[in-house]
Image (tube, rainbow, N blue to C red; front, side, top):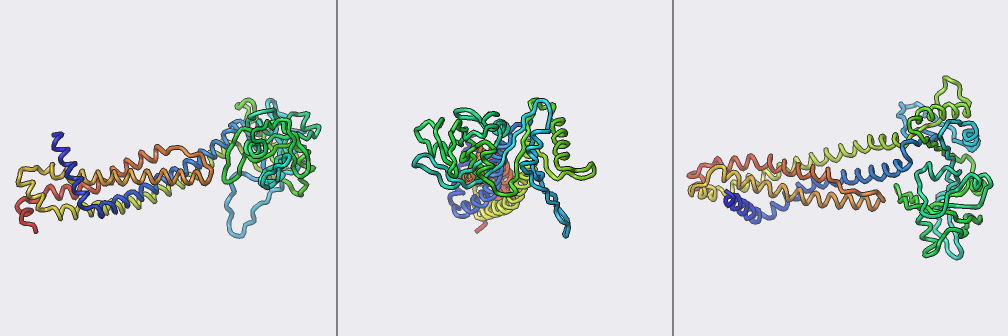
Length: 413
């Protein structure tokens, strides 16, 4: 039995080699569908991993008060979208002074610029460094970790000390083979002493989080004096069970600061880091649906192509089938031979599509600075789909070959 199977596999490979051009075209058609599936799912998975790692580092016990909610509501034609006022420094200062909830830490910050030039001695960076003004809780609430040195403390912020913490890429650019702690850098002509360096965080959507300088918030306000600066508020709760209460108290406090009466809607947003992850997941699921729809349409075409090439193969080898039947070959032996051809072609297309799909996903992740992970689910799905395509496409030609009359087959020219 094993020898017969091996012989049928050998015949199947010989048949594939004899129809090499048609086989290659069919394999490529199958591979295109599998590539679309694996490639899109790989890219979506890399996107989800990147965003999830960025927000999860903040912790599920952290929430933010911001100008708008994370999602924007669709509005009818002619309806004016509500514009929320910015979160001003007066707002955040009042919040710091009035928000009282046990076991919470409030971070206040703003981005002064994303295009600063930072100098150290005779070295300077390109104008692409982000400068953040923050209080002493910013690093912990943002999920950042120190690589060396210390964080800003309460006294640093209150005394407007000219101290700073720098990102890992900025550290490499200015202090190669030099300990940066205690060194002095210059930001827009203002001197700051480096007291700490951050661990590498990576980039998201082209925004390099390792090219930044964190300075006390009052120092930043004196350097960056643009009007209508929007501030960020982040609250971390030590006990997650008290998160809902902390959020309710934060909303009530900020409503009072905004002067809202009980019937007015909030003119600000409140978001939790895990809410953002869930919402992003609900968005990327549509990309996954698109990947499946595209691949199914393409694979449907490849199934028809594979079935066609096998029907042609049956027709071209009618005399061979008649000879084999005359020599005693059974129907199931003939059917298995053509069925094996379908399986081989299908799996070749599946393997090629998986390789191309993973490479496309890796390329997208590399170009977009996403965290690429091996898309095992997509790969297993691709194997299953290519096997299913082979089974469906090979069944009818195999049955047709098995049912041929040996006498009529021998007469076929």
